Image (tube, rainbow, N blue to C red; front, side):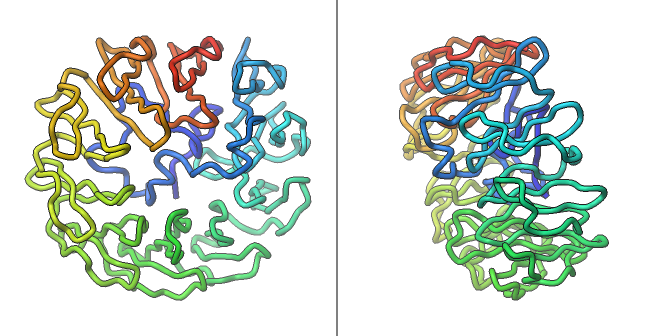
Length: 396
C-alpha cells in the first residue's frame, strides 16, 4: 500500500528526486496514505546510533560504510537496503538475508526476493520474508514467529500489521492473531504520530478508519483520504476536502480542492488551483497563492510562484527570492538545508539562501538519516553530511 524500493535502496528511508517530479506536488498518489510513507519513518532508536551503516556501491556490488565514510562491509552484495530498526536487507545470488548494525550477517541469504511493492524492512523487531508464495514473519535472529500464510503484507506499527489473504485485507497482532478478520479491499499501516492509533481502510471505493482493536470506528464514506497526523485526517467527500477528528467529526468542513497532512500545526490546502495553509481550526494562515503545496519546517517553507521556487517565512514573505527550478526541504534537524535545482543540477542552500552544496547532482535525498543523505550523479550514488561535506564520492 505504500511506495517502496528505488533500485537497491529502501524507500522506507529515502525518496530520491531529480526534477522532484515524484514529490507530492500538488497531489500525492492515493496509495501514499501517510507522510511516513512518502519520506521516512522516524528513526528507531537503533537508527540514531553512531554505528548506523549506509549502503554504497562499488564495481557493481553493494557494501556499507559508517557515517565517517569508512568501509565496514566490503561490497559483496547484489542489493543492499538502508538500515531500519537496526537491520538491513541484503541480496546475494538471488536470495535475501539481513545484516545487523555492526555489519555482521545476522540472517544468511535464504529467502525469495519479494516484489518491489512489498515490504522487507525490519520494524518493531520483525520483518516479513517470502517463502514459496506466502509471507512469514521472522525476528532478528531469523526465527520464524508467524508461519508463511499471507499473500501480501505491510510492516508492523503499534503492534499491528495489515495482511492480505485471498484478496482481502485484515490486521494481525505481533503473535499473528487476527485483530480484524480479512474484509477490506485495502488496508494501511497505523500512522506513527497518531497516539490514538487509527488506520485507514477501504471497502469498495470508499475509505474509513479502524482503531487498534480492529473496530470500524469511522465508516467508509469518503471518496479519498489520508492517514491521521496530529489528531486530524484529510478526507474528500463530494469532491471537496476537509479534515476529520479521530471520532469522524469534521473539524474543518470540506471546502478545499485538495488538502494534505498536518506535519506541523499547519497543513497545505488548495483553493482555485493555488496553495496556502490552514491551522487546526481551519483558519487560513497562508493565503492560497502558491503553485505547489507549502510545508513549514523550522519556520520556513519552500514555495513556488510563477514557476520559480524560493523560501518563505510564516508571514508568507520570501526570505529567499523565487529563482530556482525546484526547491524542497523536510524535517526539523539543524542546520536547515533546502534542496534546490539550478540549470538542471541539484544542490543545497541554507536558510539565508547561501549555497552550501553547489548544484552538481542529478538526484538528491529529502531525508538526512544518521547525519548523512544520499546524492547521485548519473547512476553513481554517494553521501554528503549536513555541512555539505562529501563523505562518499559517488560510485557505482
